[in-house]
Amino acid sequence: MKRSVKADPKKWSEKSKQSDASYYTYEYTDIKYFCRRCGKPDIFSANDQKESYEVKKKYFWQRRILCQNCWNESNAIRKEIRTYQSRWADEKTTLKNDVEFLSRWLELLVNLEEYIPFKPDLAKKNMLTKLIKQHV
Image (tube, rainbow, N blue to C red; front, side, top):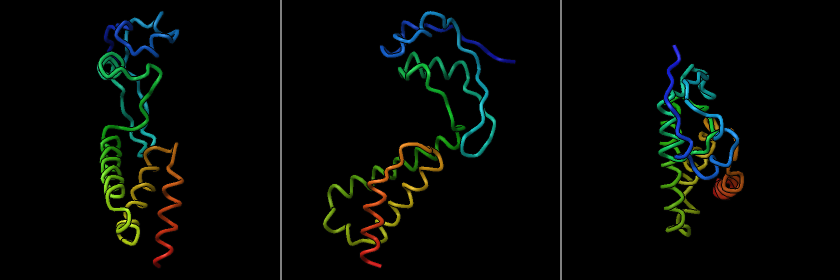
């Protein structure tokens, strides 16, 4: 049975308020979907939609493509990538010769593409591949 929750488009982001949906959305209902990565069936619950659109101010037409487990895994990868980027910014001169560091960073970027199939960081991947090849 699908659950529903009353919607309050006045609480949406400014961009979402400009959408035609703001005129005819009165409630959120559970949306069934399959995880893009693992194929597991999941639900974007009415309560999660309310939280996303009215509290977190996510764009209204955004939809989930990952189940909770894959979403958590992708966030862990992103967090580790940010750590590598931060270290790179601080220690570039030393790290450009650290094949283990460069290889792990490249591996993380490639792994992230399993979860998020769009906007791969091609420039960074190419840079890391080139630096690794210089030392192999």
